[in-house]
Length: 177
Figure: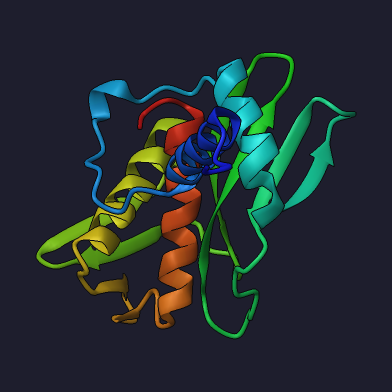
């Protein structure tokens, strides 16, 4: 007589669902109509319990504002690198996406195929749109060039993957995905 109980089957089902929920989907399209800057309690709990282990955490302004930077980001400052940073405000439940660079620069200009993208004002809407364009370029496996130097923005595949993961986490956190 088999010793496989209903509890074991339920446990197996639960683990399969958990693993499926933790996978970052590489082929989801970003729906710009769903852009929002609010972190909901359930998505925030998901982020803090399952995804936060991949981030360095920096508390700002007391304990209410927390910045999350991907741990495996390349921090070499000899060349310009772009890193998205997720910032959560506990008072307002805002989730913002900041663009940090390893070298100071007022304006970021990138070329993705024939499309040129300028980031002049680093407002939350423009920063999200800029990062979304980079994310879509990464998913389409296009080369992304930093202008005016015309050099690859993401030289290392791990750097591209880190950027993609942060963006996927942000989209889940704000229910864009």
